Length: 390
Image 1 (cartoon, rainbow, N blue to C red):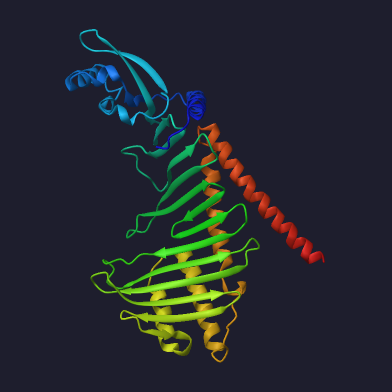
Image 2: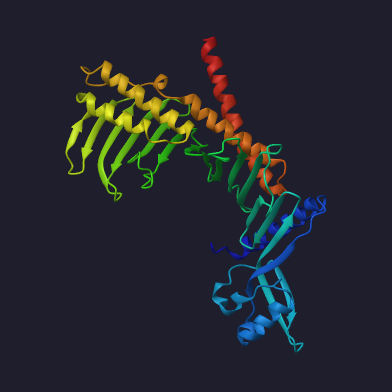
């Protein structure tokens, strides 16, 4: 936990307590009930008692107060969210401080929710399936998520799983995985295997797609790593594909590397296990092998489409322009639509859950982030219109 100065600690505790009150008012409309636990305890009087006394106090209050931390007073960090006086079975009183408060078992008909409020300003919220709740073809979709945000900054982190019941007997459930993380004006978006890192200060985007080597997949012995850097006008600056073939023990057997640059053109090489380098632009058979490995990599459809189109375009350019020293590569050779579609899916899902979040401060942060993105996209469209008019 980051050490906060005394003034910041006061602000953090005040803001967290204020958010707790707002959440309680919000969920009150649900007629919900929950179990509260106080954790991260600090108590010098209890530190000097026998362990059985502490355990008996926990039982007396039905584990509402978790006291194991009283034996580690050096872990105390920050001001408490709550102070209470606890009694043992003999009536002796002990003052205790707690730096964390959890609300758990907040159950609705289909879902279970939980909150964790921390004195350093970190608030966590999760929604999961209620135990025993099943999806049906009438209600095939289930959305669960885990959220963390910092009450002292604009930072937040959201992980979402969208699970759908299908009629396919081989794959009864189709899961889509989403992630949105915002920190220091850097937005990280993830849709299944597609990761988009966006710098909101510059408008630059980095697209990453990774498929790890799977020892259990006997049909494929390759891992794939793809990166593409886009400037603020969505023009491709540089891109690369790294394909590694693996032995059964997982060790790398050979590496195919394809690099493209708006300034330097295309480079394609193969590196053997012993370090021998082969220029793929002069070896079309080996270049075709690299493409075959991509086709059998079995990545998520969206990611596979981006990587495959990129590789096919590069291969076609190489084959057509073998005599040229620098082979050009531009946006028409990159599947920008699939990247934009992945982003749209991410923001649609974020907007979908936003309306049910009982955390006003988190919603403010999400709205600010979406406003920045919308403003940049509007400016970009205005630039395009201006260029067309001129």
